[in-house]
Length: 174
Image: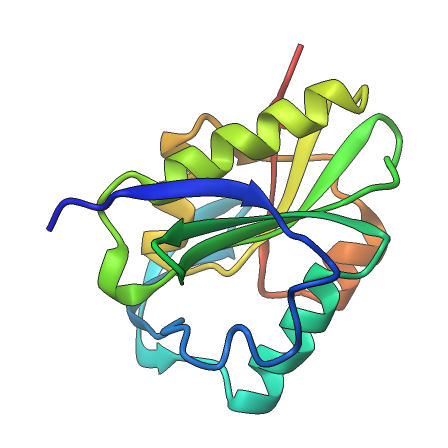
């Protein structure tokens, strides 16, 4: 399926908490990365990650929060992906809060386009690194590694403590 889409900054005056209600965030997980003996290895872990309607609405409200820079990937009027960055830098790092691509539109380059927009925004805002706290699923980590991010030995402690199972990654901008 060829996607004819556009990327646009979220317009806070027209985006509301119900705009993600139809978004299919579902992700099938078969393996995750876990830390063993100072390195990350795969572990079998089967399941499906998804968001409830309440979680989708919470995320939608966060996307329009003035503390974030957020973009949508749209096919006609349908949201097929989105990305959000925390505006305030932490030690010259811009935090990538999330990138999500609708399950039905994955594998078509939308995630890469949103990633490139995140890197561009981080550069414009003076960041030296993009910081990512990522779900440890194989698919998710492989995406970030394909984009050039790698596990950091210098995590943002508060984020690492809030999400102890996540992998903490960085991408060098300069």
